[in-house]
Length: 181
Image (tube, rainbow, N blue to C red):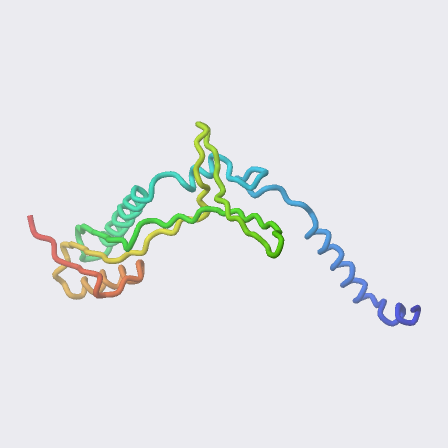
């Protein structure tokens, strides 16, 4: 045994052993709940309200409107485009992924898994599902009405910008000339 210790008890091996010990201690340190979470793993009312507020249709409409406004602002800043109006269509509405909690219990012959939705309670006492993730809808098509919409060079530039921003195929982007008033 002493031969074994003398053979393998080098400075490098002792250093590695000490670092492994420190690593195990760090892993074993208990951590508190995540920021914005209560002790039971549920969201605090303020954070949960932010993540699940509103209905799917209202959120989709505001998302669509925000994207249209941002694209209009961007296109109007391009040289030769002039005043623009933009319409964006979305493939679907927001998809909300709710947080699930799984209870595993042992039955007579097998394991049983019970899936429970995690809820939070707001200030008024109303329970709502905790929304873990919101997937915004994919842009389906874009129409741009621009003062410079009759110049083929501008049409290509506008189409390229939209394609790079929204990953929309070219045949679903339409740039037309704005009527003069």
